[in-house]
Image (cartoon, rainbow over all chains, first blue to last red; front, side, top):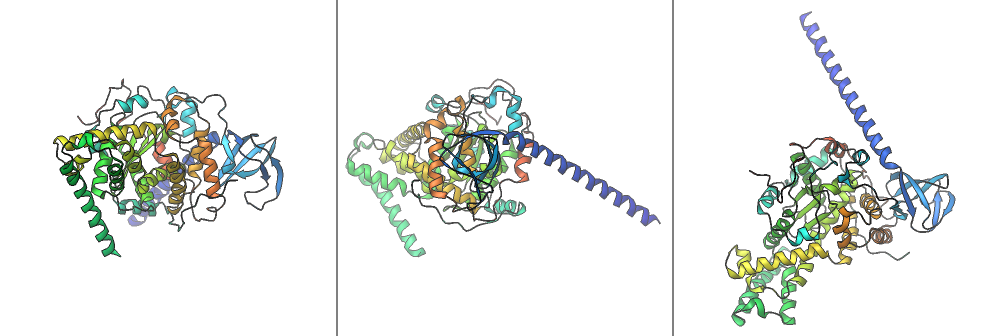
Length: 185
Length: 304
């Protein structure tokens, strides 16, 4: 009896913890998708003429031709592909055939624009009162800071630490040859 | 193979040690005298072939220059995150065994730097603009490629052609005597010029191409860097981008060169990830201690 009730309360505790964990991960997923949505609506331009494809494959059906400098809305990035909306039509183009539209100058991170924080999914860190930028003059006038260097030297992690961390994240190691320059298109 | 390599190292070291000594014997006032093409060539050759220890020392001096303009971000969590990711990427470069060190700089400017010997610095402004861990991996891998290719040594040797070659031995030995100090001053000035003018443009394209491969080898989408270049392509005239824009080819040209090289060649590399929960967690974590709200001092010191 006693053992059973102990068991029951332990089970209950585990259940509560599990529920909280699920709630936390749902919340995290929601936040992440919110951030993804917020950053996904980007305006871009086609770099070179080509085709809008029905699916993200090189041999997918062609939906429509696209021309250089045509404006698009980027809906999603997936590997080498981007899902776009162009003239009211949705489809896929190569990510490497898109540049972003400069449009009206976006607020610098230091402006404190709430959207800047939203875009990066950060917690207001982009509101950076009092932190200065770094320009040419700063470098020209720089006095080497060896105190900070000592700190930097202490930040390095061992290869084993990096490996363990990557394994925890289930990162794969792939065999990939270096690329040559390729041909002009 | 190893024996050959050891012999080659020994020969290089011998040339390196003998060169300044011989030059000093020939020209007692070495600092101002070595200007002949022969000697410049020798300096160039020897600079790229210096030992790892010497390279790290040079890298440390140059990192101190950048750290003199912006201190490290006082956020151990983010610094550790960037170091683990950076080291993992560097393990898939041609120089996995350098004592790699990565640092996040506390500045809103958008930029990233690297120095000989395995130093890589990324600004908080850059970190804030990353969409995913694969994008951050792309930026770090590009910098790692510069270090692996020794691009900085190329750039520095041009800046140092008239400088105190004879002081190299003293500099490396850690002496603070005249020649060593003269070499160090010349090195720091050449480093400043390098950071202001940038590396050779072709070296940037080459580092892009090598960087995407390093990312893919490490399990990240090779298109992360492309996403970053797209972000940069939309911000030509913003103040926080001025130095980076000045020191790099146009983002659209870099995308174009990457397109030529990549095509769909890396699409089959699998498995790769676009993002990981660790990136969102790093983003969400509040800095400990909180980001400074007080007016910035010229060179804020974190140790007191």
